[in-house]
Length: 297
Image (cartoon, rainbow, N blue to C red; front, side, top):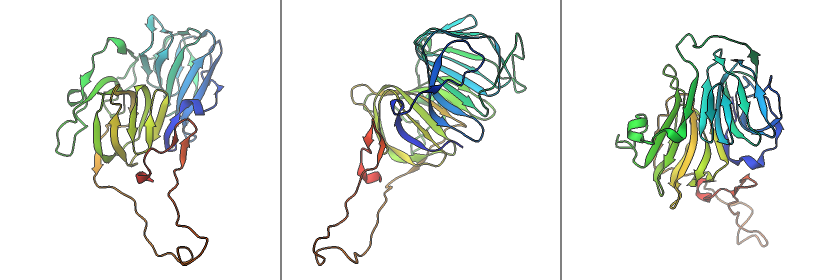
């Protein structure tokens, strides 16, 4: 499984040669989260020159989200905000990528394998096919309409969140979506989920118990990790691309805190030269620095 990553600025990662095989041209990638057991990866890819690859079939569920630049998938031209998803075993048209393009590439349940093929299956056995989205043309849907799984403690939809659904597997609930929080949006209780959750910040800013997010920051959170006390930037709000391996059910915890108590044995006023311990803030990222609030240590 992928380890817990919270929170990291992608600039703190090093570049690796891209794992996009069978293509011509140069690209490098930063591995945001990597599963060494099955090859799944979430990565940020930079195409340093024009890149292209013939049509074929992926060994893994594969998703691309364009951060900037241009990607041509068959006859589709995808600019910033463009998205495509190819299920494992489904034929994918040829790719052409302009130099300087930056893309988030997600690979699920398999490695980087890709077999060249002039033709192939257009659907999986459960009916899933290639998905292409131009997110700049899609409306923002209020969360109460776009995500019935997200509720507050009283059972009502949480206001102030908006969604663009990019992909959802109807059988498993696996989804990828854009989520936008309005400026100043807050949610106070800690939450955890029965599924993993990952997000890459695209725009704006956000504060919560693990620190602060801004464009280029990322987390991968395995199931059952508590997180929360969310506040979106007061002037900008925040926009993420969010993925989860099933429907995102929120389980809440109020009044959460961690406390340690005990009796000192060899330090204190009666022991000259000793001092009381102090709370240290571990650094999560060279860019982000310490956690924002020591209460959550």
